[in-house]
Image 1 (spheres, rainbow, N blue to C red):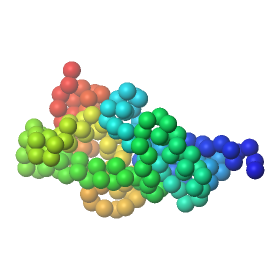
Image 2 (cartoon, rainbow, N blue to C red; image 1 turned 120 degrees about the horizontal axis):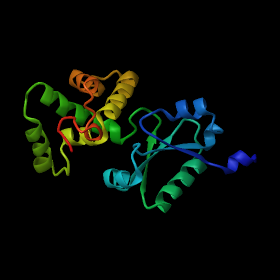
Image 3 (cartoon, helix red, strand yellow; image 1 turned 45 degrees about the vertical axis):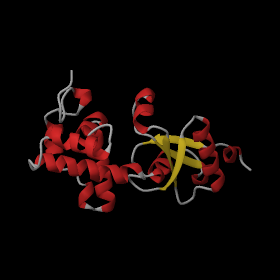
Image 4 (cartoon, helix red, strand yellow; image 1 turned 90 degrees about the vertical axis):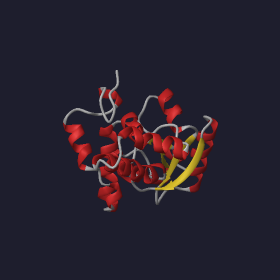
Length: 186
């Protein structure tokens, strides 16, 4: 065995194909590369948002020993590993993005106020944060990039960023980090 075979290269990524990172950055043999999906946020914020889940992205050439070592590491830091195939969105964003984009489209089409959209999901579905407030929290620029990446790969309308998001980005409305998004922040 080569010295590299004892090392697992791990990268924390947000919504990119691990093959692109692994091949582009030449981090090591593809069977010893694992990518852990955890949005790019400061660690204390990350813990509050993602709870205890870490997505382990399994590429075509990732061997089972690498996956097992990644799972053990994730469990060691007190998180719950879940496995996903190597494709844009992984598990969480694949489900979350269409939900968030539907809320943006509802607001864009004057279907309901931002407050009512958010309150409907909080009170009606038990969510701790409404979808438009969550968009602001994540950052509209980050969310737009995630949507764009997923739409480019799958060509499905539910992943396409609505025109309103592009206009908001152009006017500097990035969400909480800029002080303005769907809501205003101090």
